[in-house]
Length: 282
Image (cartoon, rainbow, N blue to C red; front, side, top):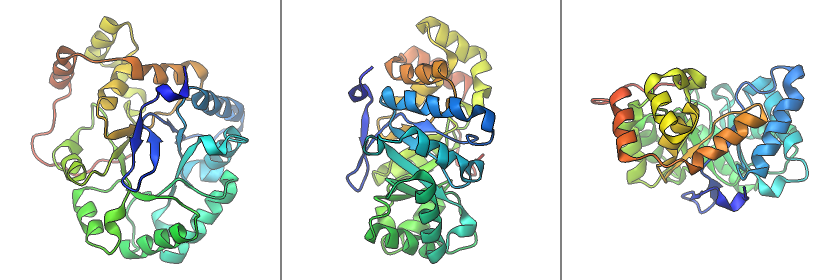
């Protein structure tokens, strides 16, 4: 399938990113699986899923090295996201962590750099680090991960905090808590959500309702879970796949259109939250 067939989302700062990408959590943890993981990422690029999400935490940096191998000779095709750990997220620590990630990724810039979750450093320090990286051309945009609506409100009140590009959070059929407050807050400010663990690490694919909806479409349950998220045009989704069949299955989710009856059935099985809930994270 041509790369152009993957829908694109425009970030607040003007950059464009594919709405369906590839996650790398738990990659780089086994030398035995390395070649298969690299091959899976390469296939995803071939299919137009050129957004790759990684982090310094994943595999102790090995996931970033796997990404480097997968994108060799193709850097300009790829939108790379990485993350700084909260214990490294002081002003100078954020810069140093980014430089280490760039070295592992064998690139001169990140397209998007996120704070993985909140830690002991004040947000203004991390933001100052991001701003320094922007000025030096080492990153093109910055954002947050695992921030609830209150965290985002605090961030937006800081000088320059309103230039946040995205918030990457846990969101799937089984984890809908952000619909009550975080999604409306972000949408009101045109800040897109990046949904991680979209199939709950494979757990929800065993659900009977999901299987029933999938059977009606001749699809896999995981594709229904992805299509449920991808129907939101202001959302990016980053499933992980480590083999070719799974990569192709994820890509085909873009071709699955859920009907109002499908959505109602899924809502009944996975009810939307009644009132606000604490942010969930993995």
